[in-house]
Structure formats: C-alpha cells, structure tokens
Image 1 (cartoon, one colour):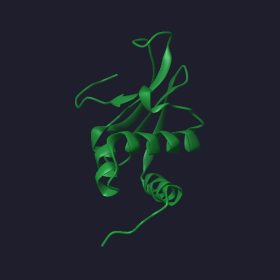
Image 2: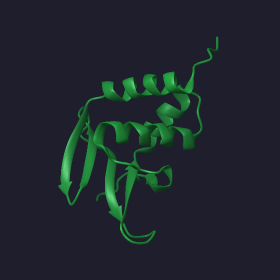
Image 3: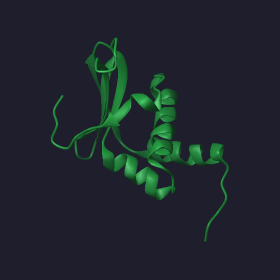
Length: 111
C-alpha cells in the first residue's frame, strides 16, 4: 500500500529517524567535526574544509549505507536523500551545506 505524504511531513519523519540514531559528536578543530555511530564507533558523517573546488569550502562526507537507508526506505533519489540529510545537519548543527558539497566516505578511509 502506498501513501501520499507531503514533503514537509516526509522531512519530519526522516528527521525523527535521524534524531533517533545514537550519534557521537567529535570536534576535530577548525570548525570540522565527525558524527559516528555510537554502537560501532565508525564515522557516519565527516564535516571538512576541502580545497579541491577552490578556496576552502566546507564539505560533508557521508557513509553510503546511511544515504542508501534513507533513499530506499523513503523511495527517494540519492540527490533527495542528500538534500534531506543536508537540511537535518543545518537544523541540528547550524551548518549550511549545499548538496553539491556532499560526497562519500570511502570504506576503510581515515581522515
């Protein structure tokens, strides 16, 4: 059975899902931070200054599994999943982050 849900209501549902996760926050200095899964200790999000696009823009790197969970659970595109995560980050961490500044955490990578 499919339901029609307004976008604002869908965002509230996804925000509730993300709020319900046990995120650990780690300040790594210079305005950069990590969010990790408290159960596994693995980073799920990393907020970093990057220089590959110019003059030190901030970027968010996400664990693919988080994006895929939201994308598949709520039947949305990858771009839309990035957008709602960006909106949630803005709400909770007062960070404005365009979707274009989001990328993937590579498994096994270490910042």
